[in-house]
Length: 188
Image (cartoon, rainbow, N blue to C red):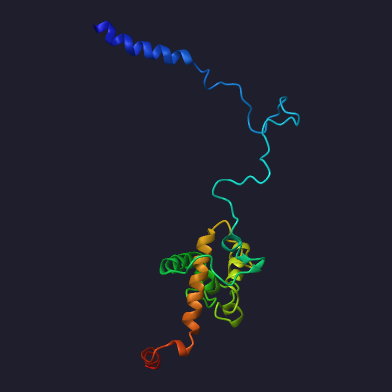
Protein backbone atom coordinates (compact mmCIF):
# COMPACT_ATOMS: atom_id res chain seq x y z
CA UNK A 1 0.00 0.00 0.00
CA UNK A 2 2.82 2.38 0.88
CA UNK A 3 4.63 1.51 -2.31
CA UNK A 4 1.68 2.51 -4.49
CA UNK A 5 1.38 5.80 -2.66
CA UNK A 6 4.94 6.68 -3.63
CA UNK A 7 4.76 5.11 -7.07
CA UNK A 8 2.27 7.63 -8.52
CA UNK A 9 4.34 10.77 -7.76
CA UNK A 10 7.50 9.02 -9.01
CA UNK A 11 5.71 8.03 -12.23
CA UNK A 12 4.54 11.64 -12.75
CA UNK A 13 8.10 12.91 -12.20
CA UNK A 14 9.47 10.42 -14.72
CA UNK A 15 6.87 11.44 -17.32
CA UNK A 16 7.69 15.13 -16.86
CA UNK A 17 11.41 14.42 -17.07
CA UNK A 18 10.88 12.49 -20.29
CA UNK A 19 9.89 15.71 -22.03
CA UNK A 20 13.30 17.10 -21.19
CA UNK A 21 14.07 20.39 -22.88
CA UNK A 22 12.60 19.29 -26.17
CA UNK A 23 9.52 21.51 -25.84
CA UNK A 24 11.57 24.63 -25.21
CA UNK A 25 14.21 23.78 -27.80
CA UNK A 26 12.10 23.50 -30.93
CA UNK A 27 13.36 24.43 -34.36
CA UNK A 28 12.21 27.97 -35.13
CA UNK A 29 13.38 31.25 -36.62
CA UNK A 30 14.28 34.28 -34.56
CA UNK A 31 12.61 37.56 -35.62
CA UNK A 32 14.28 39.04 -38.72
CA UNK A 33 16.50 35.96 -39.15
CA UNK A 34 17.38 34.86 -42.69
CA UNK A 35 15.55 31.89 -44.15
CA UNK A 36 16.16 29.65 -47.14
CA UNK A 37 12.52 28.56 -47.14
CA UNK A 38 11.01 31.73 -48.69
CA UNK A 39 12.17 33.26 -51.97
CA UNK A 40 12.84 36.67 -50.42
CA UNK A 41 15.17 35.11 -47.83
CA UNK A 42 13.25 36.51 -44.84
CA UNK A 43 11.82 34.35 -42.08
CA UNK A 44 9.43 37.09 -40.93
CA UNK A 45 6.54 37.72 -43.28
CA UNK A 46 5.34 41.19 -44.23
CA UNK A 47 1.86 42.18 -43.13
CA UNK A 48 -0.88 41.87 -45.69
CA UNK A 49 -1.54 45.35 -47.12
CA UNK A 50 -4.44 47.06 -45.36
CA UNK A 51 -4.00 45.05 -42.15
CA UNK A 52 -5.08 46.99 -39.07
CA UNK A 53 -4.40 45.91 -35.51
CA UNK A 54 -7.50 45.07 -33.51
CA UNK A 55 -8.99 48.19 -31.96
CA UNK A 56 -6.96 50.59 -34.13
CA UNK A 57 -9.25 51.01 -37.12
CA UNK A 58 -9.69 54.77 -37.48
CA UNK A 59 -12.39 54.94 -40.16
CA UNK A 60 -14.40 57.75 -38.53
CA UNK A 61 -12.70 60.90 -39.86
CA UNK A 62 -14.71 63.17 -37.54
CA UNK A 63 -13.74 61.28 -34.39
CA UNK A 64 -10.10 60.56 -35.26
CA UNK A 65 -9.12 63.50 -37.51
CA UNK A 66 -11.56 66.29 -36.62
CA UNK A 67 -12.63 66.56 -40.24
CA UNK A 68 -15.77 66.04 -42.30
CA UNK A 69 -15.28 65.63 -46.06
CA UNK A 70 -11.72 66.91 -45.66
CA UNK A 71 -12.80 70.16 -43.94
CA UNK A 72 -12.35 71.05 -40.27
CA UNK A 73 -15.41 69.89 -38.36
CA UNK A 74 -17.98 72.22 -36.80
CA UNK A 75 -19.56 69.46 -34.73
CA UNK A 76 -18.53 67.00 -32.05
CA UNK A 77 -18.54 63.25 -32.76
CA UNK A 78 -20.63 62.64 -29.62
CA UNK A 79 -22.84 64.75 -27.33
CA UNK A 80 -21.04 67.02 -24.86
CA UNK A 81 -22.70 65.68 -21.73
CA UNK A 82 -21.84 66.72 -18.18
CA UNK A 83 -19.68 63.59 -17.87
CA UNK A 84 -17.74 64.60 -21.00
CA UNK A 85 -17.28 68.16 -19.67
CA UNK A 86 -16.03 66.87 -16.32
CA UNK A 87 -13.56 64.59 -18.09
CA UNK A 88 -12.50 67.51 -20.30
CA UNK A 89 -12.02 69.72 -17.25
CA UNK A 90 -9.83 67.08 -15.60
CA UNK A 91 -7.73 66.55 -18.77
CA UNK A 92 -7.52 70.32 -19.42
CA UNK A 93 -6.16 70.94 -15.92
CA UNK A 94 -3.50 68.27 -16.48
CA UNK A 95 -2.39 68.94 -20.04
CA UNK A 96 -3.47 72.49 -20.96
CA UNK A 97 -3.61 74.67 -17.85
CA UNK A 98 0.18 74.77 -17.34
CA UNK A 99 0.41 76.91 -20.50
CA UNK A 100 -3.10 78.22 -21.17
CA UNK A 101 -4.06 78.88 -17.53
CA UNK A 102 -7.12 77.61 -15.70
CA UNK A 103 -9.45 80.18 -17.30
CA UNK A 104 -7.90 79.92 -20.78
CA UNK A 105 -6.31 83.38 -20.95
CA UNK A 106 -2.80 82.09 -21.77
CA UNK A 107 -1.42 82.94 -18.32
CA UNK A 108 -0.41 79.51 -17.07
CA UNK A 109 2.54 78.64 -14.88
CA UNK A 110 5.00 78.41 -17.79
CA UNK A 111 4.22 82.04 -18.67
CA UNK A 112 4.78 83.04 -15.05
CA UNK A 113 8.18 81.32 -15.34
CA UNK A 114 9.14 83.49 -18.31
CA UNK A 115 8.21 81.45 -21.38
CA UNK A 116 6.18 82.88 -24.25
CA UNK A 117 2.42 82.98 -23.62
CA UNK A 118 0.06 80.96 -25.80
CA UNK A 119 -2.94 82.78 -27.28
CA UNK A 120 -6.00 83.34 -25.13
CA UNK A 121 -8.95 81.07 -25.94
CA UNK A 122 -11.11 84.18 -25.56
CA UNK A 123 -9.76 85.96 -28.63
CA UNK A 124 -12.37 86.35 -31.35
CA UNK A 125 -10.27 84.27 -33.75
CA UNK A 126 -10.30 81.27 -31.41
CA UNK A 127 -13.89 81.68 -30.20
CA UNK A 128 -15.09 81.41 -33.80
CA UNK A 129 -12.67 78.66 -34.86
CA UNK A 130 -14.34 75.32 -35.66
CA UNK A 131 -13.89 72.54 -33.11
CA UNK A 132 -11.95 70.58 -35.72
CA UNK A 133 -9.27 73.29 -35.57
CA UNK A 134 -8.72 72.59 -31.86
CA UNK A 135 -8.62 68.86 -32.53
CA UNK A 136 -5.99 69.40 -35.24
CA UNK A 137 -3.84 71.61 -33.00
CA UNK A 138 -4.00 69.20 -30.05
CA UNK A 139 -3.23 66.27 -32.35
CA UNK A 140 -0.44 67.79 -34.45
CA UNK A 141 0.80 70.73 -32.41
CA UNK A 142 1.10 74.34 -33.56
CA UNK A 143 3.90 76.87 -33.12
CA UNK A 144 5.67 76.17 -29.83
CA UNK A 145 2.98 73.67 -28.79
CA UNK A 146 4.03 70.09 -29.49
CA UNK A 147 1.76 67.25 -30.55
CA UNK A 148 -0.34 65.52 -27.91
CA UNK A 149 -1.32 62.71 -30.31
CA UNK A 150 0.52 60.07 -28.27
CA UNK A 151 -0.39 61.56 -24.88
CA UNK A 152 -4.12 62.24 -25.14
CA UNK A 153 -6.55 59.70 -26.67
CA UNK A 154 -8.96 61.08 -29.31
CA UNK A 155 -12.06 60.99 -27.09
CA UNK A 156 -10.20 62.90 -24.36
CA UNK A 157 -9.14 65.50 -26.95
CA UNK A 158 -12.82 66.00 -27.79
CA UNK A 159 -13.66 66.25 -24.08
CA UNK A 160 -10.98 68.95 -23.66
CA UNK A 161 -12.40 70.84 -26.64
CA UNK A 162 -15.90 70.68 -25.14
CA UNK A 163 -14.49 72.10 -21.91
CA UNK A 164 -12.64 74.87 -23.79
CA UNK A 165 -15.93 75.79 -25.48
CA UNK A 166 -17.57 75.95 -22.03
CA UNK A 167 -14.70 78.18 -20.81
CA UNK A 168 -15.14 80.45 -23.81
CA UNK A 169 -18.86 80.70 -23.22
CA UNK A 170 -18.37 81.37 -19.50
CA UNK A 171 -16.24 84.43 -20.26
CA UNK A 172 -18.23 85.70 -23.27
CA UNK A 173 -21.88 84.80 -22.61
CA UNK A 174 -24.29 87.20 -24.32
CA UNK A 175 -26.41 89.26 -21.93
CA UNK A 176 -29.53 88.04 -23.76
CA UNK A 177 -28.82 84.51 -22.48
CA UNK A 178 -28.88 85.62 -18.82
CA UNK A 179 -31.93 85.86 -16.57
CA UNK A 180 -32.74 89.10 -14.76
CA UNK A 181 -31.55 87.53 -11.51
CA UNK A 182 -28.18 86.63 -13.05
CA UNK A 183 -27.81 90.15 -14.48
CA UNK A 184 -28.58 91.58 -11.02
CA UNK A 185 -25.91 89.34 -9.47
CA UNK A 186 -23.36 90.65 -11.97
CA UNK A 187 -24.08 94.24 -11.06
CA UNK A 188 -23.78 93.63 -7.30
